[in-house]
Image 1 (tube, rainbow, N blue to C red):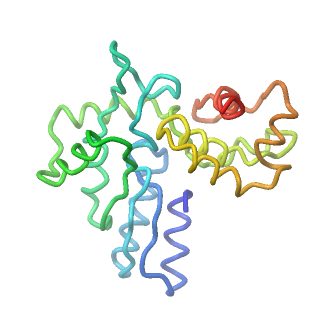
Image 2: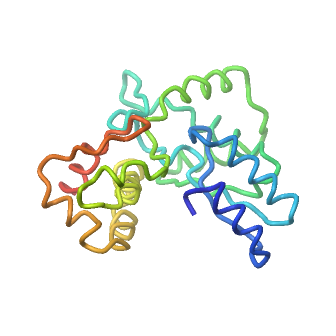
Image 3: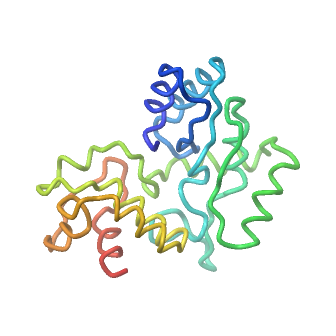
Length: 212
């Protein structure tokens, strides 16, 4: 599930689950609450698999507000972000998305030493000031839409398409939605007024999905 703390506690209390896969990264606004839920799971023998560990994408920055260096490369410190997640004892493993061998090498290199360097800690502190590059799945946006479109799912599809470059996964996410609450509804709307509580540019991402 994507609304992590709630999902974790519900899964633990149900007493029928062995493993829960949830969003967990340093960019989450409720990361402290999620960390407490992860510890609750550990204490009760439920394993946690962390997804979206590097804020949902490690392909490029820029358009989603993720930070971009002069040469166009994503300046977000993905190695530090993965270390941050794996330093939580309740996290058994992580499933970061990868589209290149370079990203695979980076993710594997983390296993050599999980200790965060002073520079990595600074990088994570700086990146926490720019959470508008990542959908928090809070759902505050949905009531703003007159058509009640499931905006968080659209933002997840946009992440797959733009950050991962994985169009099949984007299509899969979109196919989960009925036409009245998905991208088909957005096509009937020429001017999206929905505002993200965390600064994510929803209308820009929706327009990019339409073009895709």
